Length: 416
Ligand code: HEM
Image 1 (tube, protein in one colour):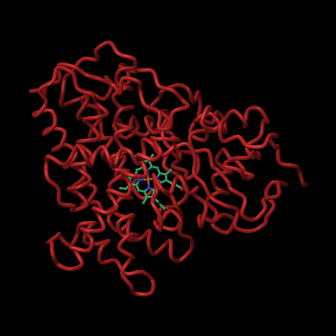
Image 2: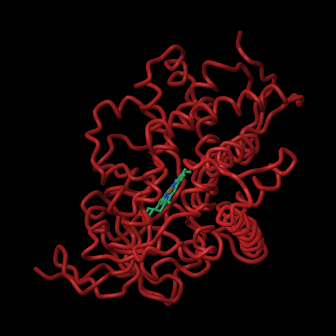
Image 3: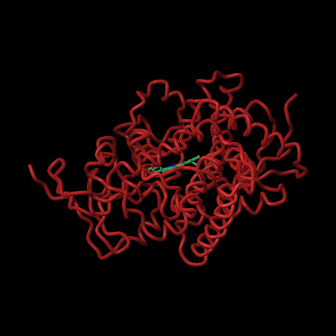
């Protein structure tokens, strides 16, 4: 039977989105007691979805498209223009395969090894009494990302790349000067990578053939042509930027060790499965990527609600991970809940849902899990440290949310 979609009145709620942050869709879900609702964002009608069935609908490519879905200000900062996120159908699958072909077992093993090496390097080089986990993780991950993709770099330039890649995700949701800083950083990094792609194509620099820089530079589209230099750069940055962004999750790993010492203690000489479950719970419990965005592809009716072609649609990733119908006591940090998790592609979606190869689920989810597990093990079993007094609170209306102090540790030493 047909029903009217619950609808929020008012001209526009973009400001509320900035004020309510991660709770924007959840607050409305509770207010209207509905998992499907309509509001207005960025000057247009927007449908919000939250939940497992709703995620399954959102990832059905017969009903939703990514073409022209992301707002311009997000493309200018976080995503770039011409990348895999905005493609549909055959073109998307072909481009997505370029990413997924990098995610072999060997390649994931390598990224774990690089992560450990770079943490060792960082801890050995540290001369400070206190270490800022977030800043250090960004440096570590910048080095991991550049090495793994085959992008040549000088040691003294790492801080600058960490800061510019950081600007793209730290400031993407901001307005005013921070927004413009984010744009400038993207342009600078794009120029730098475009030059490298040109050099690879001209044989002016040598890069191992298995490295992403080589693979993407030589990738052929469905018509057999090279990617436009700019698009190839956007895709290389689609590897570099999010690897550095894992620093956000690593900061939450460190925070969780401080907040839930009993759970952390269980990982001392714990099994690989314990590390995995703990990592999953960090990705479920803490906020990071708030929502995925698409547009209705054609008119259709679902559960009695009319979806009109071209309507902007947001799937609440955070809200679905916190959904009390899907997660028992979602406010509790309980790694062992993942022993019972059935592995559905639609209920646990910190990095999007659905399938990797044919849908838009995050290409880097396995990398993220590997790097987090390696770092978690490192922070539990390889180093000793103390948490000094600090403000570890984080605000749910900052995207990405981060502890105020960024998590500081002191007297860091390698064990043994
Ligand atoms: C897509 C989150 C790390 C590469 C996505 C999406 C989300 C996401 C929410 C969009 C899903 C959708 O639109 O349906 C995250 C989070 C990460 C992370 C929270 C933690 C830092 C990574 C890493 C990489 C990566 C490490 C690569 C090395 C990508 C790519 C896409 C994507 C290429 C586009 C996929 C497509 O459109 O088909 N990610 N991601 N991400 N992510 Fe990640």
